[in-house]
Length: 334
Image (cartoon, rainbow, N blue to C red):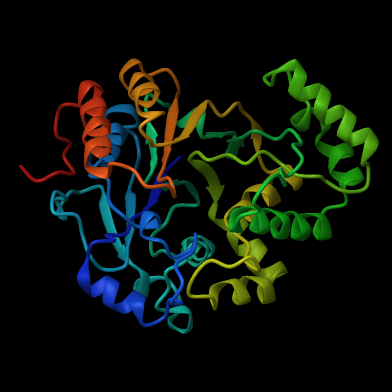
């Protein structure tokens, strides 16, 4: 089975990109166009080193970019496919500065395998993986237990997207039917007993609709055909999402496809062992310890909205990755 990786990247320091972005963004900075959404922590080389060390079987890495490229990247690397937005996103949706638009058009990437794993550039492998960790019997591996959507505190764009995603899934998959067919995937011995108990209770308390699924801030395994199914079923919503230059509360995101696969039974049960944290002065020690000791399968490093000593923290994170991934990969220039 051929398995591809897809990773999204943007150079927030590129003056040409900044100039283009300024033509469309609102005057007021918010969570969807803030500098912190786009700045480069200088740790992307370690993403490639991790893939080469921990998943050498990957067929192709599709590196999605607005047009700029990292200085370290060897564009002639045989497993690397550089993909500019204009090469797969329909021109009526460009330019875009929304990850939602890019995500919902991933299936259009030329040469993309049917089986692929989607990464954000802040998601890193910390341990060795086999193909079967992502796909078994041709199906994506993911956590299928039911988890109500969290609506606590300040409701961000991603939470609105999750609600929109869930609305689409429930409109197409009656919960009673899905549970009847795939109960052993939703409640499975691979999950913690507490998670199974929660799912069982939610099935009894809310038998007519799903209340949500786990917000997995980790690499996600997909079937390209699943994206095509969602576009066919909900073309109007997909198109409205893609017309927004920046993320909005009306959008859907990649989770609509992930959850579509779960509701339709197109997955194999798995536990996603990942660590998610924002990099701040308070958290950096623990983050570095997680990286250096490889405590989880993945780590997802969020850029905080608060003011931080960016140069100091980025250097700390780079040093931590250098402990486990000191050697250059074949994706880096000599």
